[in-house]
Length: 452
Image (cartoon, rainbow, N blue to C red; front, side):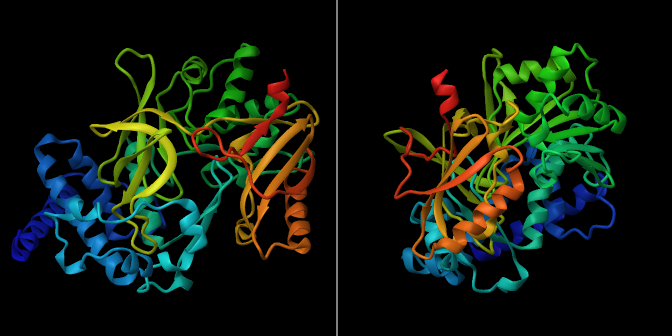
């Protein structure tokens, strides 16, 4: 395809955006100046659901990929060294073929060489850096621009908007680690349009008060981990209480089970939107029921990224390449999650379990709420939380060469501030943490359950 033809196609696509924008008003949150890509993402998602635009969408994402690959080859040191093809040789016609010339990435590869994955054209001081340990206890850090965060937001605003959700306007209940409190403190806080609850307080002492406070708040939506919502739903069921009325359940971070799906339907009776996504922004998929209602599958968003499988002895690992992240692009990123991808569908997604820890009072703490402070990833490579006794946990860490006693004491101090009211905590330095049969590290090892 000639350069002039590509330019004509891009101009045509811009006209599609303008027509779409004039045909349908986009409701944006107040007091937020959105980048132009935010509106484009909303409209591309809408157009993607219209079969008449199928070919246009294919061309747009192919050009997005070509642009990303050219940019990384020119301005990202790692790819400049690792890939031999020339940037000028990549276009929309051959972008997916060129993609196969890029090596697969792992978390360890990135965290051991973070700086070489940064785009040299971006001012690092203007970027935000976030880390996550996920379900594996292996840290991953990502630099992003404000625009890239807004683009990410647009994908969720569109999908959740199908249920009537309006970013910045809908009233949201969140079970959030950002709202964590000491065991003796009131476990919630209010914002302008949200009610955040500490997930560490979903126990006999607080559940009645939490339920009543949620009823008083009258939420439009819940945004939560499935494991946290399960505790509330079981309380409602056990106490034979009226269901909580809202517009929908927005579930994140964990795979949720069929039993949870049934439980949530019985105790809320509202639409459910669950998704599969990562802080690395490499893949995004939303959950649906199978036709026989026997299992839940995940439909990938083809505008968000290119998803493929890496087949190894453990099965079909999910690999992703985002079309939208230019500040720190991850190309062919191996997620450590497994599920065979066929026709844009992830079947039987594996790798994101739900684990619990038992506090001193016998209450359950969802494993996904356990967080390590961002600074610690400079000093350790992997961590794991082990529970052998009720109310006690061991934080096993694999230290880096710069780890020292001062860092150990600082980590322990921060963790005691966070959940010392629930557990006695010790830190144990280890040379390695064993992997599961699928080659992953487990974040939570609960030996209380295995001994029962």
